[in-house]
Image (tube, rainbow, N blue to C red; front, top):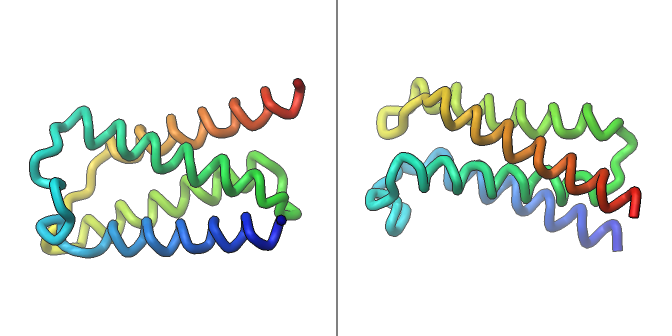
Length: 113
C-alpha cells in the first residue's frame, strides 16, 4: 500500500512540475482563471501534495516533509522568474504555504481520532 501511495506522490510531483513549466497558453482554461481562483487552485494542489506526501510515511519529520514540499513550490516560482511565459508571484507562494499547512493540520487531526 505504501508503495502505491509513494508512486502516486511521485507521479503527482512530476505532473505538477510539468504543468508549472509549460507555457500557460498550453493548459486548457488557464487563461480564464481569475486571480482568486488561481490561488485557490494553488492551495488545493499543495494541500493534496502535502497530505499524500504525509501518507507516504517517509522517514522524515512531518514538518520537514511539509517544508520540502513548500520548497518544491518555491523552486517552481523561482523558475517562473526566469521563464519567458510565466510569472513569479508571492501570492502563489502564500497559497502554497496555506495549502501545505492545511494538509498538515488535517493529517494531524486524523491521527488524533
